[in-house]
Amino acid sequence: MEGPMASISLAPAPAATAGCGSGSRFAHVQQAPEDPIYGVTNAFLKDPSPVKVNLGVGAYRTEEGKPLVLNVVRKAEEQLLADKSRNKEYLPISGITHFSRLSAQLILGSDCPAIAEKRIVTAQCLSGTGCLRVGGEFLAKHYSGPKIIYIPATTWTNHFRIFPNAGMEARTYRYYDPKTKGLDYEGMMEDLRAAPSGAVVLLHACAHNPTGVDPTREQWAEIQHLVRDEKQLLPFFDSAYQGFASGSLDADAWAVRQFVNDGGETLVAQSYAKNMGLYGERVGALSVIVKDPDVALRIESQVNLVIRPMYSSPPTFGAAIVCTILGNKALYEEWKVELKGMADRIISMRHQLFDALKARATPGTWDHIVNQIGMFTYSGLSKEQVEYMKTEYHIHMTSDGRISMAGLNTRTVPQLADAIHAAVLQFA
Ligand code: KET
Image (cartoon, rainbow, N blue to C red; front, side):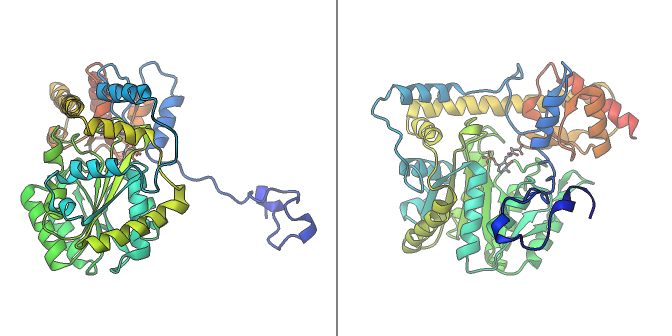
């Protein structure tokens, strides 16, 4: 064998020299592929251009291009720091109980029967990703149906790793139709209909990432009928953008509430990364809604048993911020205004980009820029076009053509429009 592998013996090393041989015991480790989203940030950081723009990761930026800490978050932090009775004890395995209750109310509505009837288990987990991971492992260990999760064929790339790592088999259902730049509704229904009865189905609660394409309310009703009545699938909602899609927390929770309020069993992973701007604080809530309060109690014990050997218990500060905001009427109202401000700025970026492309008479149809929902525009630009825009215009985005609209501002819209225009002409 040639190269760095050559010094590795595949035969067991003699006991006396174990661990002290000439080569590394890890020399066989292969370079992992870069994460499709974090990789964009890395390339952006390495780009020396003063006009570089990062439209990769879904993280909100102000009109000045800066990360935003919400005012309500600052106020909550000040209150927490001033409270000298606070300590640094471990939280319970499933986090702050008050946080869990407030989170369940936020996503399901405070009048949700499942909450009143104690048919819900909510655990504070490490942001949306942690909720999906813990939920996935809980299902892999305890779900009585097929341990298969159906994921949209185009989705947040991490879904494809989270569920197999948790022990679930991941399969896909058709979701996005590149021809119409809309929902492949027929394909989705056909694939879910062909799934084994009782399989798990991952649904984006709103503002589907990366496509920005959500089912209509009529389509949701038919999906719900298929999931509940025809196939007895188990819905697992990923809610990473509540409030970010429309600016309304209630409107963006509509689909989740429809499913939970029909009395069927449902899982929900909630993230506070985007809607409270708590990205790095890693705050989220996993809810398992079932039919019976006794079952809920036992599930709680098993969710704890998933968490305890994984990271023992969650961090305190981010969840305390969320509790402070959700538990105080004035702060809660202020948060809703700030959240709407972020959603509105993103929507205005959509219109500015659309107008800028129209003004340049860029070939193609661009209606999807204003029609898609949430943080991203799934532009339809090819890998080559994305690469061209990076080298020629210092615009960084994921290779699937996803544009984080939250990373744009009035100053960078013309630069992006110029780049798209040139890329479209270059690779017509
Ligand atoms: N679900 C979806 C659909 C999602 O887009 C994200 C993050 C998450 C879950 C997880 O977020 P968390 O920070 O764990 O609460 N998406 C953006 C950031 C990332 O890739 O981590 C993104 O797509 O850019």
